[in-house]
Length: 229
Image 1: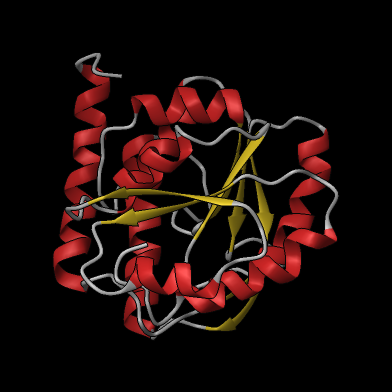
Image 2: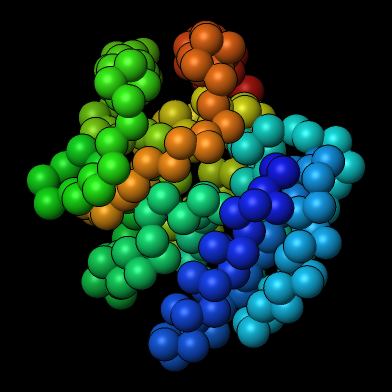
């Protein structure tokens, strides 16, 4: 979470409604990525009904760093990470369960595969940039993923720990890096079509973050050929 005081209530309500409906023991970790607003105070005020922990650090580091922090602390057999804006509803996790039962190591939500339901699209400019980033990621990283950046992914715990321990990208290029690493370490990756709705209050700065994401792809290749992974 980074400055999510206006959206954290939506997240808590969704989890409050979903977690009691499943029998699995759930370990919820909120990561506060150096928020400067009242995100933590709002979370405490909401008093979620489920048990949760907060990983907190004072300076903003980026989404990739926040995920690494939370995932390396997570204790479940599977680790799911999701966006605070709930663009993909938590109920979509039910679509992952058959693959979880098969112990598939990496399961990722996709807005691009057959069966996906995009309720509210990004504006055409953002959508084209996203498609371009997917194309570049597949070309540079020699992969075949339909949707790198959907923020709804589940890892078997052993795969999560290995991949995120090796992860180096702190900001937006982390999606491509973790899937590259999963493939490098020979973990099977399955894509699942999900429901998704764009939230206009995105944190992505088009010009700055698109360029940074491109340079991150080059870094991933560099780290790989120099045996940094």
